[in-house]
Length: 119
Image (spheres, rainbow, N blue to C red):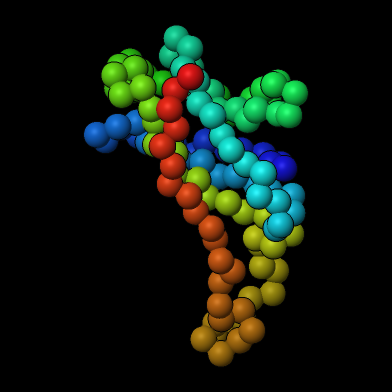
């Protein structure tokens, strides 16, 4: 399951775009289906659990222009970057010339771009 969710930024283009960093506990964990809700000017992201309960992951306060766009479109676009604890950490021993060393390749960073309807 999801360990933590960080909202990096919320921007306004043709629609409201939310950039998220999602940290997972295990690389084989695929159980993540976010939902979005807008109450007053608070955008909240949550997941639904098995027994029809909701677990809130993150909240962000939107400005007036973003609230108007979100209410007009009734959806937000989420750009999600997934990372796994223990796999996507910080390198402690870096090779001086990365072209020739064992750290020449980066680990894959899976990303989603998804449209979340507002509930």
